[in-house]
Image (cartoon, rainbow, N blue to C red; front, side):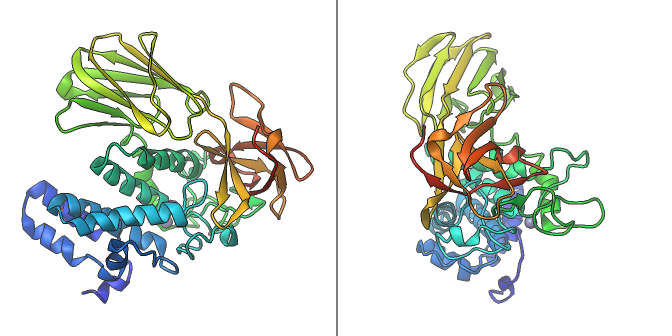
Length: 402
Ligand SMILES: [Zn+2]
């Protein structure tokens, strides 16, 4: 059986664990464990990064399964596998927009600058990493790092992998990170393009049937006693919390705006925990117009009260410019603004030198930016929106941030 597991078998243990949850019949859990791939799980349980050279997306579903098998069994090895895999991938194998893999494979730990190619960041991998993140956060809901990653990957890679001009919902396979990358200008097959109706069919098109229906499933969470409501993402949405007879309407144009408003309908006692992102330069939270003491970035604001219809919470997280350097080359970096990665609109084929102190936002109502790069003024947009153009995402950086 372990030899058989050397080939791609996707989410078998995840699916079998789900059947166990739905039926309570342990035979499904026993069968799920038959798909525990020890050659992958044992090093990860020991926190060893042996991912180099492995097919990336084959393995992420094994880690999602490990998280679910941990919840079903309490066996700590499963949790160690899932947590260590997440940490190793995020810290040593992930590009600035949140995606991982080059030509579908993990490369040597921290080797980012050597693999800024046309076939980086397979779409499926990020979708599966978000599923893993969802599972791990639910086990450790005080850890803001999980949803900082979730937000970064959702806003940059996942939304950017959807062709905004396609009425058929076309998605990308890879998202290229080479200088002058083609975003929707490449050949019909493979790198630097979106799917076509009939002349391409990738794993990522199968994944996309799920992925764009799942943007809403990680905005709000409650604890098992329904005494705490978590607000993890800032997305215009309506939460019908039926068991509490509470409705919460979140209104925002985030990330174009840095503010979100949550309006409560219904009455009841609960704690609202709002994620204060690690990128926030400053935070202002008001309840019915009165400011509360906001916690530091990278934690949860906690508002415990007896809520009444019409109560309004506003949360403002000031965005600023930052850099996300390649792990192996600090002079080569992506530019960030709050949770967003910014891409320069440029066909340069080597990384242009960008003067950090010239970065500025050029509109308050749109996500448009400029900087001096390659010796002249370059316009920048958020990675997700920079489509059907040539872009640069990693720059040679000089100077200091404004
Ligand atoms: Zn794929």
